[in-house]
Image 1 (cartoon, rainbow, N blue to C red):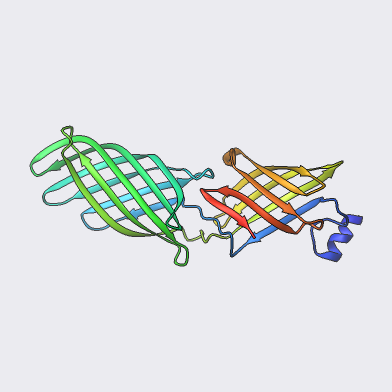
Image 2: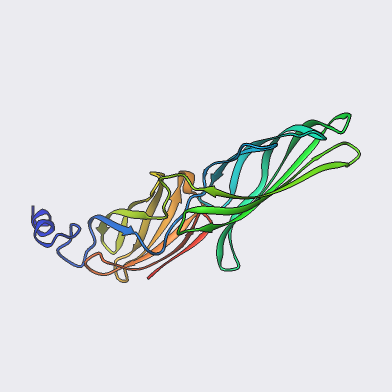
Length: 245
């Protein structure tokens, strides 16, 4: 009852002393922003049609698969590709993606039919204002003798409508002796949630958040004041460095 009265009076997490105990929420609407590049990215219409389905993992890698179809007067092919390497990175001070895929292809080059191997590379960078990826796609449908039908396209992909970079961190904490323990979750604007275990000493209130489940092998570190205000946050998620303030 004492904790509840304090929470109602102060409008803060359940705290009335230096001990951290209760539910805490921190919303990030300006910085640092957190982007999830998962989605379906399609280039349709015209002779070349591409549909790639990407999944951005919390570690920063990108997995997925796609299909590419070309139908022109001189050549045609149908190809599938699984992503072999993909990642989110910072290049030239811009948040970027670099994805490479490979798979089987069957087609026609001039009057010759063939089956072979397909290669595709998608590179691009985020335009956070317009919530788009400005990208280039290079693909090659290759015959067994390594003769390839090569195509390049410059495109602008829109991120899924519910991805705007905002996110929140919530923690449920309890203090026992000289240790703070609890759980935490990160929720992105698209509703995707990552779970963490929390631990840290009461003296400095530096808490280490260790990812579990899908977020395994990811870490965040936060420092809180005695009343639960967020002083600092550091870590890396989805290939992006998170630093507050």
